[in-house]
Image (cartoon, rainbow, N blue to C red; front, top):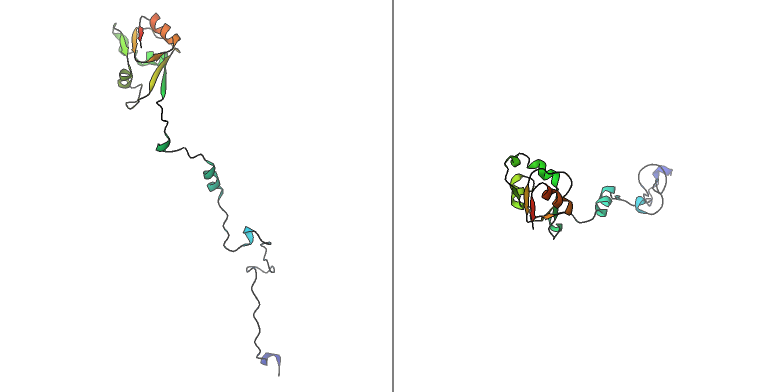
Length: 146
């Protein structure tokens, strides 16, 4: 009898670490996430998204109305073409909307500050005005009605 004629049942050895000829762990190391089958490391973008504050979208709009601030110089330059007439221009919220200085759906409060110069008389109604802006408006011949 020769070796190739032996007909004995041999137990098959367990396959360990598949892939490459590097022994039992096959270059994966011992234990941990990186040594497991089917491992998938989470991308860094997802961690960045998780860190972002969840304050976006239409549900998180401010509940209080905003205050829009105008300087007297901006109003004067926008109304320079209209001010050719000698009569006083009445500045209200609706007037600023029609003049294009304010959005048509704006619902907050307005305030005029004193940066800039005005040379023609205006009458301000229903809009908050700072002390310096009030002095400049009155110096130009206008008045402030609150």
